[in-house]
Amino acid sequence: MPKHELSQGFPPRLLREEAMVEACRVRDFSVIFQLAKRAGFYPARLARCVELTPSAVGEIIKGNREINNISVVERVADGLRIPGRMLGLARRDWEADSAAVAVQVTSSEVDPFGCLADTGPDVEPTDPQFVAALIESQLPQHYKSSNFFGARHTIPAVVQHAQTITRLLERGSSGVPREALLQTGGRVAEFIGWLYQDLGDFRRAALWSDRAMEWAQEAADGHMQAYILFRKSNQATARASADRAVGLAKAAQRLPGLTPQIEALAAQQEAQGYALMGNPKAALARFDEARALVAEPTQTVPATGLDTSYCTPTYIEMQRANCWIDLGKPQQAIELFEGHLEALPQVYRNDRGVYLARLARAYVRAGELERGAEAATKSLGIVRYTGSARTFGVLSAVADSVAGERRLPTVAALLEHFAVVRDRFAA
Image (cartoon, rainbow, N blue to C red; front, side, top):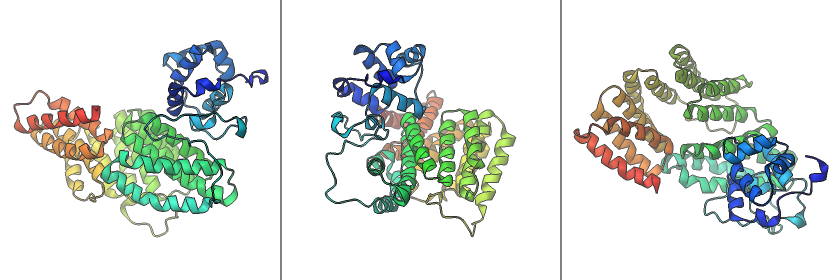
């Protein structure tokens, strides 16, 4: 941005508007630029400030183009004088302590990235390593809680953890304390990304995954970087982006010194990408490799701080089963689901709901509508508590497939139950 424009940014009154606060909170640059245009910042001026072309700014305003690259987000913050915390960024170099904008957070939802502005120094100094260790010690319980009760119950607490870590990093922690914050922060941010993915909010999921990668890279945490690439591949698979899913999974496997579990997670994710492409040979080969990696316990596994204990032969076979449906072999999927569901620990209630929904989908594809309805009804009994959009999306497809078969009592009961749960999701 030209130096003569450094002082030309959004006026404080615009930054205090509720619509602007909310748009920045979710990084909706279409709304941000629309509000700016109404305030007199026309596309040509916006383009100069943020170093984009006027046509690109026009596309963003129309909602035809998104800003996801973190460097462009930073250019927007700097060019328009939007405080870093409003966009989930660190404090910008130009932000003076005496010139902070009073931002009113009106949303009842937990503020995703940022922290509210500090109102003053802590009464007592905080040891960053102590905080990092304390948060780290609570993560296993959060993992269990989210899988049993659902993501929406866990998000407020873990977002507060991320905000605490962000605040301590912004206060200038360095050396070993900063590394501890970054490593724990990477795990927390990755977990939040997964929680939002389960709730069907892929926008926030991607933002948190990007934050996790930023922290993991600064901490030189190779295992975490590989795990985040696996997670991004999983997000791509969920959105049926096969090439991206395979590419990200391969990228995860290129990092050196990985544990067998992380290698297996990336390999089976690559397999899912191949299944989306309709390539059963490549998919099954990668599933076989993934299962072999976790079939026998390894004696010397390096400590990573990551919980990959869920990556077992049962987990691999559940993913294989889902791909059998897409590959046109629902009977093989049914056999795998039925054979492994009983082995799933009770704490994995949310996952059980997903697998039951996929089993229902397999039964319907195989023409066994009543058994499909029975499995779907069991899944609905779980999703009504967990709120998993991941599960509900599969159940919606099942309900659509059997909608014309209400003459069957089990199908009629399923559709009635589904309508009740659907209305709760829409509320």
